[in-house]
Amino acid sequence: MSEKKKYKPMIELKLIRIRKGLLQADLAKRLGVSQNTISMYETGNRFPSRTNLQKLAEVLECDIRDIV
Image 1: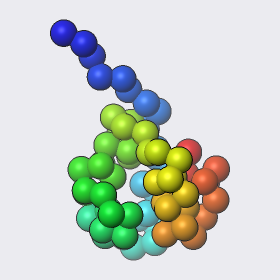
Image 2 (image 1 turned 90 degrees about the vertical axis):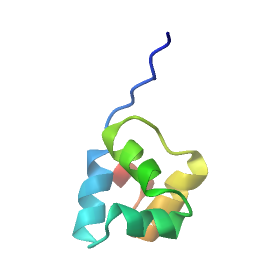
Image 3 (image 1 turned 90 degrees about the horizontal axis):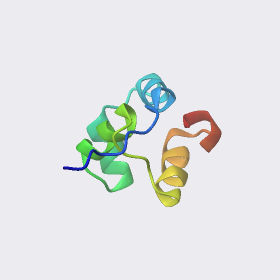
């Protein structure tokens, strides 16, 4: 049985999302992903692709370095 790879939780992503007044579902809709995907990014169970990192930065109006 293999274990899933764990990434560093994206705490800054969550904080910026909350500061912008967005729910996970709101951010997910703007990115074209599921709410579960956003949850997995924030908890470190998944890491966004380069494309999704760029989209996150655009939607949240920040630099990629601010969210990783």
